[in-house]
Length: 511
Image (cartoon, rainbow, N blue to C red):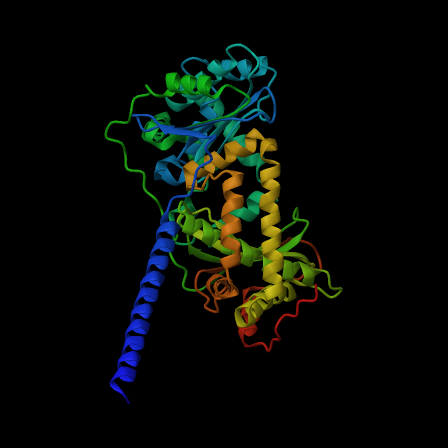
C-alpha cells in the first residue's frame, strides 16, 4: 500500500469518525431540546385572567357569551370532610348549609330572597356541594340588571368570611340536614356506604364521608362548627371564579374590591394531604339492592396520580386517551355480538377521589346472569392487549378520531357554555388541570400524534391492568331479587386467577 493511499484511508477514517461525533452531538442536542420542550409549562388560554391577591386568594375571570346576559360565579374552597376532626364528622357539610342561613350582609333568609328577586331559583341557579377535599358554592346571576353582579359578589364575600352562625338557625338546620341524611338513603347512598370502606380501606377517607354521623349532626357543639369554618375558610385555600356575558375589566375590579382585603389567616392550620395506602390484594365490593335496576361490574387499579402542568405530561395524557379509546372500541365491538355477556363496556383512566391516586378501570353493564362471564370478558380483552398489543390500523383510526374531536372544539369554541368553563377553572384550582385554548390543544395534538407509537401505548396494558393482585378492586352492583344468584368473592377471584393462563389469539381488525 502506497503512503498516498494509506494517507487517503486515514483521512477518510478521521472524517468518518468526526462525522459520527457530530451526529452523536446533534442527536444529544435534539434529545436535550425535546426534554426541555417536554418540561415546558402548558400554555394557558389568553382569554382567561388568572391572578392571586396578597392575602393568598386566587381568581379566574373570563368573558363568555353563552348564555347571553348570564354569569356563572363560584367560590371554591380546598376544604371538605377529609379535614374534619373526630368530633366534627358532618360539620363541613353543615357549614355549607349555614352559609345559606344568614351572613353579615344577608341575615337569615335574605340571601335566598335576593336571588329569587333576580328571577333565579334556589337549587337551579344557587347551590353548593361538599366533598372529601373541597366545598364549592355556585351562583348564576343576570348581567343585565343594575347592581346584580356587585350584590352577587357580596354574597360570595360573605360566604368566604362572614357567615353568621346564628344559634337559632344552627338548631333549625340540624333538622334540615338530618332530613337530607334520611332522604338520601336510596340505592346510590347504600351502595356507596358499602363500596367506600372497601375502596378506602386503611385510609382517613374511609371514615370521612361528607354526610357525616347523625349523632354529631344532631348534637355537635356550635363552637366546633365555627372552628371548622375558622380553620379552613381562608383566602389561601380559596378561589373566586367568574365566567359570563360581562365586561372582564369591570368584573376584575369588582373581584378586587370584594376579595383582596379579606384578612389573610394568622398562624394557619396546616392543610394536610391524605394518601390512599397500597392494597396488598384484590378488594371486593359486592352490592345488591332492591332499588337497583341494572347489573354492572367494574375492575379498578389504583395508580399514582399523574402530574399535570407540563407539555410532556399533557402528551402522556394523550397516550392514555389513545389506549382508552382503542380498548373501549374493542369492548364495544364485543358487546355487539349475540352471545356477549355485556351490553356496554368501556375502559379508561381518571382522577380518583383520593387526590394522590388515579384509577384505571374496566367497566361493563352486564346481563343479570352473566357477571362472571362479563368479568372474564373484560379481563380477557385487557390481557389480549398486554400480550399482543393493538394494531397499526386501530391506532391510525384512533388518532384520526382524536384529531377530529379537537378540530370540532376549535370550530365550536365560541359556543362553550359558561358553566362548562367554570367547571374547568374549578378543576384547575383543585387538581391543577391544564387550561390551554382549543387552538393550542389542536396544535399540540397535530404535533404529538404522528410521533406516538404502539410501543409506548401497548406498555400501558400491564401498568393499568397488571397480573398482580395489588391495588385492585372489583365492584359488582346488582338488583336484589328472587332467583338472581350473585357470585361471591371466591368465584370472582377464580375468574381473575384463570385469565392470565388462557390461550388467546391476537385481535384481528376487520373494520
